[in-house]
Length: 136
Image (cartoon, rainbow, N blue to C red; front, side, top):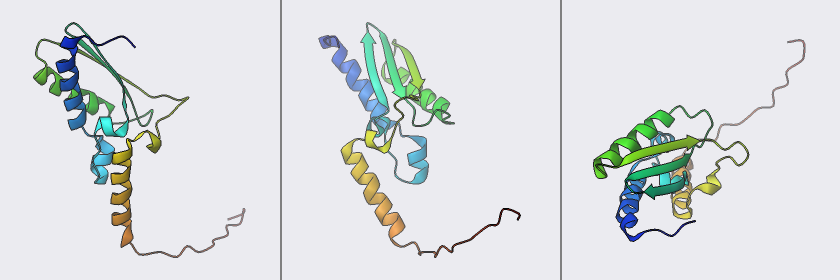
């Protein structure tokens, strides 16, 4: 990894603020919104002059919201970094797929707490053994 130039730090700070404010759509829809940074989806941020390249890993190869994530990041970065060109690369890693272990520890604790509260009052529904014959 190359050393960061001093003038890159404000740009990196702006990028991280944006990545902290863009939420994974599925976690938000589920009721426990986690940012892209919290989800562990940000693989790299590179600044080269007035060009910013972001590489983000998707949680699923067929993520239906990838276009929305990209649009939201781009709109926010263009607003906070006028004059910069933005390149956003989204990919799914089939050999090392995303898992909940990639969520930052504080966010994972928050998610676990949210799940515990959500499911604490759900009724337990008994499951019956159902045998299905091959001819049915």
